[in-house]
Picture (tube, each protein chain N blue to C red):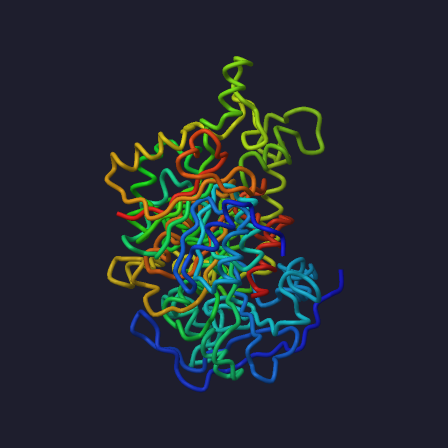
Length: 196
Length: 368
Protein backbone atom coordinates (compact mmCIF):
# COMPACT_ATOMS: atom_id res chain seq x y z
CA UNK A 1 0.00 0.00 0.00
CA UNK A 2 0.98 3.64 -0.40
CA UNK A 3 2.75 5.16 2.60
CA UNK A 4 0.55 7.44 4.67
CA UNK A 5 1.31 11.13 5.02
CA UNK A 6 3.57 11.43 8.11
CA UNK A 7 0.95 13.02 10.36
CA UNK A 8 -1.61 10.36 9.36
CA UNK A 9 0.92 7.62 10.05
CA UNK A 10 1.38 8.97 13.58
CA UNK A 11 -2.39 9.00 14.12
CA UNK A 12 -2.81 5.50 12.66
CA UNK A 13 -0.16 4.17 15.04
CA UNK A 14 -1.89 5.59 18.09
CA UNK A 15 -5.53 4.70 17.48
CA UNK A 16 -6.45 1.72 19.65
CA UNK A 17 -7.26 -1.32 17.47
CA UNK A 18 -10.95 -2.07 17.01
CA UNK A 19 -12.10 1.41 17.97
CA UNK A 20 -14.83 3.51 16.43
CA UNK A 21 -13.48 6.50 14.55
CA UNK A 22 -14.84 9.57 12.80
CA UNK A 23 -12.39 11.16 10.35
CA UNK A 24 -13.48 14.75 9.78
CA UNK A 25 -12.07 16.00 6.50
CA UNK A 26 -11.11 12.48 5.49
CA UNK A 27 -9.99 13.43 1.97
CA UNK A 28 -9.55 10.38 -0.25
CA UNK A 29 -9.91 8.07 2.76
CA UNK A 30 -6.24 6.99 3.05
CA UNK A 31 -6.26 7.11 6.86
CA UNK A 32 -9.66 5.42 7.09
CA UNK A 33 -8.48 2.58 4.86
CA UNK A 34 -5.38 2.09 7.02
CA UNK A 35 -7.48 2.15 10.19
CA UNK A 36 -10.03 -0.27 8.73
CA UNK A 37 -7.58 -2.72 7.17
CA UNK A 38 -4.69 -2.63 9.64
CA UNK A 39 -6.30 -1.73 12.94
CA UNK A 40 -9.78 -3.19 12.33
CA UNK A 41 -11.51 0.04 13.22
CA UNK A 42 -15.08 0.99 12.39
CA UNK A 43 -14.17 4.17 10.52
CA UNK A 44 -16.63 6.80 9.27
CA UNK A 45 -15.78 9.96 7.41
CA UNK A 46 -16.99 13.48 6.73
CA UNK A 47 -15.60 15.20 3.63
CA UNK A 48 -16.50 18.40 1.83
CA UNK A 49 -15.29 17.51 -1.70
CA UNK A 50 -17.78 15.28 -3.57
CA UNK A 51 -15.07 13.77 -5.78
CA UNK A 52 -13.22 12.62 -2.66
CA UNK A 53 -16.46 11.23 -1.19
CA UNK A 54 -17.14 9.28 -4.39
CA UNK A 55 -13.57 7.92 -4.23
CA UNK A 56 -14.10 6.81 -0.62
CA UNK A 57 -17.44 5.13 -1.35
CA UNK A 58 -15.86 3.34 -4.31
CA UNK A 59 -13.29 1.95 -1.83
CA UNK A 60 -16.08 0.70 0.40
CA UNK A 61 -15.81 3.41 3.05
CA UNK A 62 -18.77 5.10 4.73
CA UNK A 63 -18.35 8.80 4.11
CA UNK A 64 -20.82 11.67 4.27
CA UNK A 65 -20.38 14.75 2.14
CA UNK A 66 -20.55 17.66 4.50
CA UNK A 67 -18.85 20.59 6.12
CA UNK A 68 -17.08 20.39 9.49
CA UNK A 69 -18.41 23.86 10.34
CA UNK A 70 -22.08 22.91 10.00
CA UNK A 71 -22.57 19.15 9.84
CA UNK A 72 -20.84 17.95 13.02
CA UNK A 73 -23.93 19.12 14.89
CA UNK A 74 -25.81 16.10 13.50
CA UNK A 75 -23.54 13.57 15.22
CA UNK A 76 -24.68 12.28 18.60
CA UNK A 77 -22.64 12.84 21.80
CA UNK A 78 -19.95 10.26 22.43
CA UNK A 79 -20.67 8.54 19.11
CA UNK A 80 -17.05 7.46 18.54
CA UNK A 81 -13.88 6.64 20.46
CA UNK A 82 -11.80 9.02 18.36
CA UNK A 83 -12.74 12.03 16.28
CA UNK A 84 -9.91 12.89 13.91
CA UNK A 85 -9.27 16.23 12.25
CA UNK A 86 -6.15 16.09 10.13
CA UNK A 87 -4.96 19.20 8.30
CA UNK A 88 -8.47 20.60 8.33
CA UNK A 89 -8.70 22.84 11.41
CA UNK A 90 -7.07 25.74 9.56
CA UNK A 91 -9.75 25.56 6.83
CA UNK A 92 -12.73 25.85 9.17
CA UNK A 93 -14.71 29.02 9.78
CA UNK A 94 -14.81 28.52 13.56
CA UNK A 95 -11.92 26.34 14.70
CA UNK A 96 -12.76 26.68 18.37
CA UNK A 97 -16.31 25.45 17.86
CA UNK A 98 -15.11 22.61 15.66
CA UNK A 99 -12.69 21.51 18.40
CA UNK A 100 -15.55 21.57 20.88
CA UNK A 101 -17.66 19.44 18.54
CA UNK A 102 -14.84 16.91 18.08
CA UNK A 103 -14.64 16.38 21.83
CA UNK A 104 -18.42 16.16 22.13
CA UNK A 105 -18.62 13.44 19.46
CA UNK A 106 -15.40 11.60 20.34
CA UNK A 107 -14.10 10.42 23.70
CA UNK A 108 -10.77 11.64 22.38
CA UNK A 109 -9.72 13.74 19.43
CA UNK A 110 -6.66 13.75 17.20
CA UNK A 111 -5.97 17.15 15.67
CA UNK A 112 -3.13 17.79 13.23
CA UNK A 113 -2.32 21.12 11.65
CA UNK A 114 0.54 22.99 9.94
CA UNK A 115 2.63 25.20 12.22
CA UNK A 116 2.61 28.77 10.98
CA UNK A 117 5.51 29.68 13.30
CA UNK A 118 7.95 27.25 11.66
CA UNK A 119 11.27 29.05 11.05
CA UNK A 120 10.93 28.85 7.28
CA UNK A 121 7.56 30.59 7.44
CA UNK A 122 8.99 33.22 9.79
CA UNK A 123 11.96 33.85 7.51
CA UNK A 124 9.80 34.11 4.46
CA UNK A 125 7.65 36.73 6.10
CA UNK A 126 10.55 38.52 7.77
CA UNK A 127 12.92 38.72 4.76
CA UNK A 128 10.55 38.35 1.87
CA UNK A 129 7.75 40.44 3.31
CA UNK A 130 5.32 38.16 1.50
CA UNK A 131 2.87 35.55 2.72
CA UNK A 132 4.89 32.33 2.74
CA UNK A 133 4.48 29.69 0.07
CA UNK A 134 6.31 26.60 1.34
CA UNK A 135 6.14 22.89 0.51
CA UNK A 136 3.71 22.52 3.44
CA UNK A 137 1.70 25.63 2.55
CA UNK A 138 2.01 25.54 -1.23
CA UNK A 139 -0.94 27.71 -2.24
CA UNK A 140 -0.88 31.49 -2.62
CA UNK A 141 -2.82 33.55 -0.08
CA UNK A 142 -5.64 34.41 -2.47
CA UNK A 143 -6.37 30.78 -3.31
CA UNK A 144 -5.57 28.87 -0.16
CA UNK A 145 -8.42 27.12 1.66
CA UNK A 146 -6.46 27.80 4.86
CA UNK A 147 -8.19 30.70 6.53
CA UNK A 148 -7.22 30.28 10.19
CA UNK A 149 -3.48 29.82 10.53
CA UNK A 150 -2.06 29.11 13.94
CA UNK A 151 1.25 28.30 15.50
CA UNK A 152 1.78 25.39 17.86
CA UNK A 153 1.90 27.83 20.78
CA UNK A 154 -1.36 29.42 19.63
CA UNK A 155 -2.99 25.99 19.63
CA UNK A 156 -1.58 25.18 23.07
CA UNK A 157 -3.05 28.44 24.37
CA UNK A 158 -6.44 27.65 22.86
CA UNK A 159 -6.71 24.18 24.39
CA UNK A 160 -5.66 25.62 27.77
CA UNK A 161 -8.37 28.23 27.47
CA UNK A 162 -10.93 25.56 26.51
CA UNK A 163 -9.88 23.45 29.48
CA UNK A 164 -9.07 20.56 27.19
CA UNK A 165 -6.51 17.97 28.26
CA UNK A 166 -3.53 17.23 26.01
CA UNK A 167 -3.05 13.46 26.28
CA UNK A 168 -0.13 13.37 23.91
CA UNK A 169 1.50 15.41 21.16
CA UNK A 170 3.85 14.74 18.25
CA UNK A 171 5.81 17.29 16.26
CA UNK A 172 7.12 16.63 12.79
CA UNK A 173 9.45 18.21 10.29
CA UNK A 174 9.05 16.01 7.24
CA UNK A 175 9.49 12.55 8.75
CA UNK A 176 11.69 13.82 11.59
CA UNK A 177 10.35 14.17 15.10
CA UNK A 178 10.95 17.47 16.89
CA UNK A 179 10.94 17.98 20.65
CA UNK A 180 8.00 19.68 22.33
CA UNK A 181 10.26 22.48 23.56
CA UNK A 182 11.58 23.35 20.08
CA UNK A 183 8.37 22.52 18.24
CA UNK A 184 7.01 26.01 17.75
CA UNK A 185 10.13 27.00 15.83
CA UNK A 186 11.27 23.72 14.29
CA UNK A 187 8.16 21.59 13.58
CA UNK A 188 6.24 21.92 10.34
CA UNK A 189 3.33 19.87 11.63
CA UNK A 190 1.81 19.16 15.00
CA UNK A 191 -0.47 16.34 16.06
CA UNK A 192 -2.31 16.56 19.36
CA UNK A 193 -4.32 13.88 21.13
CA UNK A 194 -6.95 15.66 23.21
CA UNK A 195 -9.57 14.69 25.73
CA UNK A 196 -12.09 16.60 27.81
CA UNK B 1 -21.61 -2.61 -24.66
CA UNK B 2 -22.67 -6.18 -24.12
CA UNK B 3 -26.34 -6.64 -23.46
CA UNK B 4 -27.49 -8.03 -20.15
CA UNK B 5 -28.36 -11.70 -20.10
CA UNK B 6 -32.03 -11.93 -19.31
CA UNK B 7 -32.51 -15.21 -17.49
CA UNK B 8 -36.11 -14.92 -16.38
CA UNK B 9 -39.16 -12.94 -17.44
CA UNK B 10 -42.02 -14.29 -15.40
CA UNK B 11 -45.18 -13.37 -13.57
CA UNK B 12 -45.58 -14.69 -10.06
CA UNK B 13 -49.05 -15.06 -8.55
CA UNK B 14 -48.82 -14.56 -4.81
CA UNK B 15 -50.16 -17.64 -3.02
CA UNK B 16 -51.74 -15.63 -0.20
CA UNK B 17 -53.64 -12.34 0.01
CA UNK B 18 -51.52 -9.21 0.34
CA UNK B 19 -52.55 -7.17 3.39
CA UNK B 20 -52.39 -3.43 2.63
CA UNK B 21 -51.89 -0.29 4.70
CA UNK B 22 -55.43 0.90 3.92
CA UNK B 23 -56.82 -2.10 5.80
CA UNK B 24 -57.97 -4.02 2.75
CA UNK B 25 -56.20 -6.98 1.23
CA UNK B 26 -55.75 -8.09 -2.35
CA UNK B 27 -56.20 -11.67 -3.53
CA UNK B 28 -54.23 -13.26 -6.33
CA UNK B 29 -51.73 -10.42 -6.71
CA UNK B 30 -49.49 -10.83 -9.73
CA UNK B 31 -45.90 -9.63 -9.75
CA UNK B 32 -44.25 -9.39 -13.16
CA UNK B 33 -40.48 -9.46 -12.91
CA UNK B 34 -37.29 -9.94 -14.85
CA UNK B 35 -34.04 -11.42 -13.64
CA UNK B 36 -30.54 -11.25 -15.08
CA UNK B 37 -27.47 -13.31 -14.29
CA UNK B 38 -27.64 -16.31 -11.98
CA UNK B 39 -28.26 -16.83 -8.31
CA UNK B 40 -25.25 -18.22 -6.48
CA UNK B 41 -25.47 -21.55 -4.64
CA UNK B 42 -25.44 -19.69 -1.31
CA UNK B 43 -28.15 -17.29 -2.62
CA UNK B 44 -26.18 -14.28 -1.45
CA UNK B 45 -25.61 -12.36 -4.69
CA UNK B 46 -29.08 -10.99 -5.38
CA UNK B 47 -29.52 -7.30 -6.15
CA UNK B 48 -33.07 -5.97 -6.26
CA UNK B 49 -33.61 -2.92 -8.44
CA UNK B 50 -36.70 -0.87 -7.69
CA UNK B 51 -38.12 1.26 -10.48
CA UNK B 52 -39.52 4.78 -10.50
CA UNK B 53 -43.09 6.06 -11.02
CA UNK B 54 -43.43 5.21 -14.70
CA UNK B 55 -40.67 2.60 -14.86
CA UNK B 56 -41.10 -1.12 -15.22
CA UNK B 57 -39.37 -4.48 -14.89
CA UNK B 58 -37.58 -4.08 -18.22
CA UNK B 59 -34.49 -2.64 -16.58
CA UNK B 60 -32.05 -3.93 -19.18
CA UNK B 61 -34.22 -5.56 -21.83
CA UNK B 62 -36.09 -3.80 -24.63
CA UNK B 63 -39.46 -2.35 -23.71
CA UNK B 64 -42.18 -4.56 -25.25
CA UNK B 65 -44.29 -1.59 -26.45
CA UNK B 66 -41.76 1.08 -27.39
CA UNK B 67 -38.91 -1.24 -28.38
CA UNK B 68 -36.50 1.12 -26.60
CA UNK B 69 -33.58 -0.32 -24.58
CA UNK B 70 -34.23 -1.07 -20.92
CA UNK B 71 -34.45 2.05 -18.74
CA UNK B 72 -31.15 1.29 -16.97
CA UNK B 73 -29.42 -0.70 -19.71
CA UNK B 74 -26.42 1.57 -19.26
CA UNK B 75 -26.07 0.43 -15.63
CA UNK B 76 -27.08 -3.25 -15.65
CA UNK B 77 -25.17 -5.87 -17.63
CA UNK B 78 -21.93 -7.84 -17.86
CA UNK B 79 -19.02 -5.71 -16.53
CA UNK B 80 -21.35 -2.76 -15.97
CA UNK B 81 -21.68 -1.13 -12.52
CA UNK B 82 -24.50 -3.53 -11.61
CA UNK B 83 -22.60 -6.49 -12.99
CA UNK B 84 -24.81 -9.36 -14.14
CA UNK B 85 -21.74 -11.63 -14.34
CA UNK B 86 -21.51 -11.27 -10.60
CA UNK B 87 -24.99 -10.45 -9.35
CA UNK B 88 -28.40 -12.00 -9.76
CA UNK B 89 -30.31 -8.85 -10.65
CA UNK B 90 -34.08 -8.75 -10.12
CA UNK B 91 -36.50 -6.02 -11.14
CA UNK B 92 -40.25 -6.29 -10.63
CA UNK B 93 -43.08 -4.10 -11.86
CA UNK B 94 -44.56 -2.35 -8.83
CA UNK B 95 -47.98 -3.09 -7.39
CA UNK B 96 -50.47 -0.66 -8.92
CA UNK B 97 -48.60 -0.37 -12.22
CA UNK B 98 -49.67 -1.64 -15.63
CA UNK B 99 -46.83 -3.71 -17.07
CA UNK B 100 -47.96 -7.11 -15.79
CA UNK B 101 -48.23 -6.63 -12.05
CA UNK B 102 -51.65 -6.21 -10.47
CA UNK B 103 -53.00 -2.68 -10.78
CA UNK B 104 -56.24 -0.82 -11.43
CA UNK B 105 -56.38 -2.12 -15.02
CA UNK B 106 -56.24 -5.74 -13.81
CA UNK B 107 -59.37 -7.85 -13.57
CA UNK B 108 -61.06 -7.94 -10.18
CA UNK B 109 -62.88 -11.05 -8.90
CA UNK B 110 -65.92 -10.21 -11.08
CA UNK B 111 -63.81 -10.26 -14.21
CA UNK B 112 -64.08 -6.51 -14.88
CA UNK B 113 -61.08 -4.19 -14.37
CA UNK B 114 -60.75 -2.85 -10.83
CA UNK B 115 -60.55 0.75 -12.07
CA UNK B 116 -61.29 2.96 -9.03
CA UNK B 117 -62.32 -0.07 -7.00
CA UNK B 118 -58.60 -0.79 -6.68
CA UNK B 119 -57.49 -0.05 -3.12
CA UNK B 120 -55.29 3.00 -2.50
CA UNK B 121 -51.82 1.56 -2.03
CA UNK B 122 -48.65 2.85 -0.38
CA UNK B 123 -44.94 2.59 -1.02
CA UNK B 124 -44.81 0.05 1.81
CA UNK B 125 -47.48 -2.03 0.05
CA UNK B 126 -45.32 -2.05 -3.09
CA UNK B 127 -42.42 -3.23 -0.95
CA UNK B 128 -44.57 -5.97 0.59
CA UNK B 129 -45.16 -7.35 -2.91
CA UNK B 130 -41.41 -7.17 -3.64
CA UNK B 131 -40.64 -9.04 -0.42
CA UNK B 132 -43.18 -11.75 -1.36
CA UNK B 133 -41.34 -12.13 -4.65
CA UNK B 134 -38.01 -12.53 -2.83
CA UNK B 135 -39.61 -15.23 -0.70
CA UNK B 136 -40.84 -17.06 -3.79
CA UNK B 137 -37.36 -16.86 -5.32
CA UNK B 138 -35.83 -18.28 -2.14
CA UNK B 139 -33.80 -15.16 -1.37
CA UNK B 140 -33.63 -14.48 2.35
CA UNK B 141 -31.24 -11.58 2.23
CA UNK B 142 -30.31 -9.34 -0.68
CA UNK B 143 -26.73 -8.32 -1.33
CA UNK B 144 -28.22 -4.90 -2.01
CA UNK B 145 -31.38 -3.06 -2.87
CA UNK B 146 -30.98 -0.21 -5.36
CA UNK B 147 -33.48 2.43 -6.41
CA UNK B 148 -33.74 5.91 -7.87
CA UNK B 149 -36.60 8.36 -7.27
CA UNK B 150 -39.67 6.30 -6.23
CA UNK B 151 -37.36 3.28 -6.39
CA UNK B 152 -35.25 4.98 -3.73
CA UNK B 153 -38.34 5.47 -1.56
CA UNK B 154 -39.06 1.75 -1.84
CA UNK B 155 -35.42 0.94 -1.02
CA UNK B 156 -35.70 3.08 2.14
CA UNK B 157 -39.00 1.46 3.04
CA UNK B 158 -37.59 -2.03 2.51
CA UNK B 159 -34.50 -1.32 4.62
CA UNK B 160 -36.67 0.20 7.37
CA UNK B 161 -39.60 -2.24 7.41
CA UNK B 162 -37.88 -5.47 6.37
CA UNK B 163 -34.39 -4.87 7.80
CA UNK B 164 -33.41 -8.54 7.70
CA UNK B 165 -33.99 -8.61 3.93
CA UNK B 166 -31.00 -6.59 2.77
CA UNK B 167 -27.38 -6.03 3.73
CA UNK B 168 -27.06 -2.80 1.76
CA UNK B 169 -29.29 -0.06 0.38
CA UNK B 170 -28.39 2.39 -2.36
CA UNK B 171 -30.82 5.28 -2.65
CA UNK B 172 -30.48 7.73 -5.53
CA UNK B 173 -32.29 11.05 -6.05
CA UNK B 174 -34.99 10.18 -3.53
CA UNK B 175 -36.68 11.50 -0.41
CA UNK B 176 -38.01 10.11 2.86
CA UNK B 177 -41.23 12.09 2.46
CA UNK B 178 -43.13 13.90 -0.22
CA UNK B 179 -43.05 17.65 0.25
CA UNK B 180 -45.99 19.99 -0.29
CA UNK B 181 -44.46 20.93 -3.64
CA UNK B 182 -44.12 17.26 -4.66
CA UNK B 183 -47.76 16.63 -3.75
CA UNK B 184 -48.83 19.80 -5.55
CA UNK B 185 -47.24 18.76 -8.85
CA UNK B 186 -48.81 15.31 -8.59
CA UNK B 187 -52.20 16.83 -7.90
CA UNK B 188 -51.94 18.86 -11.11
CA UNK B 189 -51.36 15.61 -12.99
CA UNK B 190 -54.22 13.78 -11.33
CA UNK B 191 -56.63 16.64 -11.90
CA UNK B 192 -55.63 16.75 -15.58
CA UNK B 193 -56.50 13.06 -15.91
CA UNK B 194 -59.76 13.29 -13.99
CA UNK B 195 -60.83 16.44 -15.86
CA UNK B 196 -60.63 14.57 -19.17
CA UNK B 197 -64.19 13.44 -20.05
CA UNK B 198 -62.70 10.21 -21.42
CA UNK B 199 -61.66 9.28 -17.87
CA UNK B 200 -65.32 8.44 -17.06
CA UNK B 201 -64.73 8.10 -13.31
CA UNK B 202 -61.98 5.60 -14.11
CA UNK B 203 -64.23 3.23 -16.09
CA UNK B 204 -62.71 3.83 -19.51
CA UNK B 205 -61.38 0.34 -20.16
CA UNK B 206 -64.46 -0.87 -22.06
CA UNK B 207 -64.54 2.25 -24.23
CA UNK B 208 -61.40 1.59 -26.19
CA UNK B 209 -59.99 5.01 -25.47
CA UNK B 210 -58.76 6.31 -22.13
CA UNK B 211 -58.13 9.86 -20.91
CA UNK B 212 -55.16 10.29 -23.22
CA UNK B 213 -55.29 14.08 -23.26
CA UNK B 214 -55.39 14.26 -19.49
CA UNK B 215 -52.65 11.67 -19.03
CA UNK B 216 -50.54 13.46 -21.60
CA UNK B 217 -50.86 16.79 -19.75
CA UNK B 218 -50.01 15.03 -16.48
CA UNK B 219 -46.86 13.65 -18.08
CA UNK B 220 -45.92 17.04 -19.53
CA UNK B 221 -46.19 18.73 -16.14
CA UNK B 222 -44.25 15.95 -14.43
CA UNK B 223 -41.60 15.88 -17.13
CA UNK B 224 -40.72 19.52 -16.42
CA UNK B 225 -39.96 18.55 -12.82
CA UNK B 226 -37.54 15.86 -13.99
CA UNK B 227 -35.33 18.35 -15.87
CA UNK B 228 -33.29 21.32 -14.77
CA UNK B 229 -33.96 24.82 -15.99
CA UNK B 230 -30.41 25.02 -17.33
CA UNK B 231 -30.92 21.69 -19.10
CA UNK B 232 -34.08 22.94 -20.81
CA UNK B 233 -32.38 26.21 -21.76
CA UNK B 234 -29.37 24.37 -23.19
CA UNK B 235 -31.50 21.96 -25.16
CA UNK B 236 -34.22 24.28 -26.44
CA UNK B 237 -33.68 27.87 -25.36
CA UNK B 238 -36.34 29.94 -27.09
CA UNK B 239 -35.76 28.13 -30.37
CA UNK B 240 -38.74 27.83 -32.70
CA UNK B 241 -39.97 24.48 -33.98
CA UNK B 242 -39.59 24.04 -37.80
CA UNK B 243 -40.47 27.67 -38.46
CA UNK B 244 -38.66 30.95 -38.70
CA UNK B 245 -41.26 33.17 -37.07
CA UNK B 246 -43.88 33.01 -34.37
CA UNK B 247 -47.29 32.11 -35.81
CA UNK B 248 -49.40 34.29 -33.52
CA UNK B 249 -51.37 31.16 -32.75
CA UNK B 250 -51.33 28.26 -30.32
CA UNK B 251 -49.44 25.66 -32.29
CA UNK B 252 -46.23 24.36 -30.80
CA UNK B 253 -44.21 27.37 -31.93
CA UNK B 254 -41.39 26.66 -29.51
CA UNK B 255 -39.23 23.55 -29.59
CA UNK B 256 -39.82 23.00 -25.90
CA UNK B 257 -43.58 22.86 -26.51
CA UNK B 258 -43.18 20.36 -29.29
CA UNK B 259 -40.86 18.26 -27.13
CA UNK B 260 -43.27 18.20 -24.19
CA UNK B 261 -46.25 17.40 -26.41
CA UNK B 262 -44.30 14.49 -27.87
CA UNK B 263 -43.33 13.26 -24.40
CA UNK B 264 -46.96 13.46 -23.29
CA UNK B 265 -48.41 11.62 -26.29
CA UNK B 266 -45.71 8.91 -26.33
CA UNK B 267 -46.41 8.26 -22.66
CA UNK B 268 -50.08 7.44 -23.25
CA UNK B 269 -49.07 4.53 -25.51
CA UNK B 270 -47.39 2.75 -22.65
CA UNK B 271 -49.06 3.82 -19.43
CA UNK B 272 -52.45 3.40 -17.81
CA UNK B 273 -54.04 6.61 -16.51
CA UNK B 274 -55.51 4.97 -13.41
CA UNK B 275 -52.11 3.46 -12.57
CA UNK B 276 -50.75 7.00 -12.75
CA UNK B 277 -53.37 8.15 -10.22
CA UNK B 278 -52.69 5.29 -7.81
CA UNK B 279 -48.91 5.39 -7.95
CA UNK B 280 -48.69 9.17 -7.54
CA UNK B 281 -51.03 8.83 -4.53
CA UNK B 282 -48.75 6.21 -3.01
CA UNK B 283 -45.79 8.57 -3.41
CA UNK B 284 -47.70 11.47 -1.85
CA UNK B 285 -48.62 9.34 1.15
CA UNK B 286 -44.98 8.38 1.70
CA UNK B 287 -43.51 9.72 4.93
CA UNK B 288 -41.09 7.25 6.45
CA UNK B 289 -40.68 9.20 9.70
CA UNK B 290 -44.46 9.36 10.20
CA UNK B 291 -44.57 5.55 9.96
CA UNK B 292 -42.06 5.39 12.82
CA UNK B 293 -43.32 7.74 15.49
CA UNK B 294 -42.29 10.94 13.70
CA UNK B 295 -38.56 10.35 13.98
CA UNK B 296 -36.72 9.27 10.86
CA UNK B 297 -33.75 7.85 12.81
CA UNK B 298 -36.17 5.41 14.51
CA UNK B 299 -37.17 3.97 11.14
CA UNK B 300 -33.76 2.36 10.80
CA UNK B 301 -33.38 1.07 14.37
CA UNK B 302 -33.57 -2.59 13.32
CA UNK B 303 -31.33 -2.33 10.30
CA UNK B 304 -27.78 -3.58 10.03
CA UNK B 305 -27.43 -2.59 6.38
CA UNK B 306 -24.87 -0.30 4.81
CA UNK B 307 -26.49 2.74 3.23
CA UNK B 308 -25.44 5.01 0.41
CA UNK B 309 -27.40 8.11 -0.60
CA UNK B 310 -26.73 10.04 -3.77
CA UNK B 311 -28.32 13.33 -4.84
CA UNK B 312 -27.74 15.59 -7.84
CA UNK B 313 -27.01 19.30 -7.62
CA UNK B 314 -29.57 20.20 -10.33
CA UNK B 315 -32.40 18.00 -8.98
CA UNK B 316 -35.06 20.36 -7.65
CA UNK B 317 -37.73 17.63 -7.36
CA UNK B 318 -35.91 15.74 -4.60
CA UNK B 319 -33.12 18.18 -3.78
CA UNK B 320 -29.92 17.39 -1.91
CA UNK B 321 -31.36 18.58 1.41
CA UNK B 322 -33.71 15.56 1.35
CA UNK B 323 -30.90 13.03 0.93
CA UNK B 324 -28.73 14.83 3.46
CA UNK B 325 -31.53 14.65 6.01
CA UNK B 326 -31.77 10.88 5.52
CA UNK B 327 -28.00 10.58 5.87
CA UNK B 328 -28.06 12.52 9.13
CA UNK B 329 -30.92 10.37 10.46
CA UNK B 330 -28.98 7.19 9.62
CA UNK B 331 -25.91 8.69 11.23
CA UNK B 332 -27.85 9.53 14.37
CA UNK B 333 -29.00 5.90 14.41
CA UNK B 334 -25.35 4.85 14.21
CA UNK B 335 -25.68 3.12 10.84
CA UNK B 336 -22.87 2.94 8.28
CA UNK B 337 -23.91 5.57 5.77
CA UNK B 338 -22.37 7.40 2.86
CA UNK B 339 -23.88 10.42 1.20
CA UNK B 340 -22.81 12.57 -1.69
CA UNK B 341 -24.19 15.22 -3.99
CA UNK B 342 -22.98 14.62 -7.52
CA UNK B 343 -22.76 17.34 -10.09
CA UNK B 344 -24.81 16.61 -13.24
CA UNK B 345 -26.69 18.90 -15.59
CA UNK B 346 -29.81 16.81 -16.15
CA UNK B 347 -31.90 17.57 -13.05
CA UNK B 348 -33.81 14.73 -11.36
CA UNK B 349 -33.41 12.50 -14.43
CA UNK B 350 -29.62 12.49 -13.90
CA UNK B 351 -29.88 9.08 -12.24
CA UNK B 352 -30.98 7.59 -15.57
CA UNK B 353 -28.42 9.39 -17.72
CA UNK B 354 -24.70 9.46 -18.32
CA UNK B 355 -23.08 10.51 -15.04
CA UNK B 356 -19.73 8.67 -14.81
CA UNK B 357 -19.30 9.52 -11.12
CA UNK B 358 -22.57 7.69 -10.38
CA UNK B 359 -21.32 4.60 -12.20
CA UNK B 360 -18.19 4.57 -10.05
CA UNK B 361 -20.12 5.02 -6.82
CA UNK B 362 -22.62 2.26 -7.64
CA UNK B 363 -19.91 -0.17 -8.73
CA UNK B 364 -17.80 0.61 -5.65
CA UNK B 365 -20.68 0.39 -3.20
CA UNK B 366 -21.89 -2.94 -4.60
CA UNK B 367 -18.38 -4.42 -4.77
CA UNK B 368 -18.17 -4.68 -0.97
